[in-house]
Length: 178
Image (cartoon, rainbow, N blue to C red; front, side, top):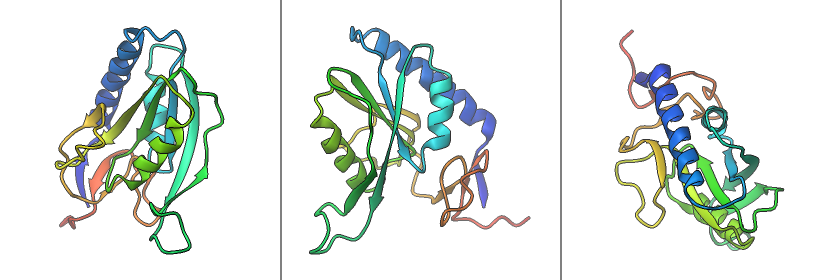
């Protein structure tokens, strides 16, 4: 593994992002606290640090989506929501917080599900963004844009369910000589 982003840089960028989102919401004119929705499992560390540094009141909730190969017996998008949000979102601003958008199928399904509940606005927040991010699903708020195609581990990113607890972000594509 190769160290890509050390903990101190993650901390600084996440704190700055939290302040930007807080200011964005304050200037929106929406009287309701925003609803911050964490996409489990990958975004949990990012989400926790992000909301701790927000200077405004927020509601929080969690959603979990499972991606799978689409076939005749499953949903056409290949995504199943296995844990849905529980808070009311009508008229409120939603910030969907995810580690990154890869194919976009999961985010499309989440947005579709949440749009049906009449929020005032939905914005995507990601920790990292690929260099060729999807134009149809732009993340309004990103801590680390243009990160390339590496397989990330640490700070929520996993390798077969492991390594999410690492404090730094590593590239799993490279083998260190140490």
